[in-house]
Image (cartoon, rainbow, N blue to C red):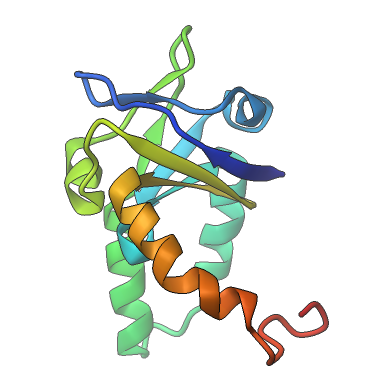
Length: 143
């Protein structure tokens, strides 16, 4: 399970070293793709296959499903960490997420997310008080 908040740097070649805690799940290969809120989703290759299988169940007659599928998969990139655990982040994804040198990587269970640190801080500040004062069930049976 991928958890926590980490602060790696993007190097001059557009590579990032993901947290050591994530390596056991991600060293065998990863898929990077566009995430929502302008972050990059990081899936293990195995988890991405599971997600893709679920996506394939969406009706092709749904314009929203077609749009999601096109944007989600057209931005996807298979990557393999190098011997120093660096992962190249393709230019199109760096541009999409507005990545600069300072990054925030968060673990959200079945995937990680790569954020530009300033964007993450703005997102967190904007949504934290609503999270802290949430009174309605958001995830059935959990909260």
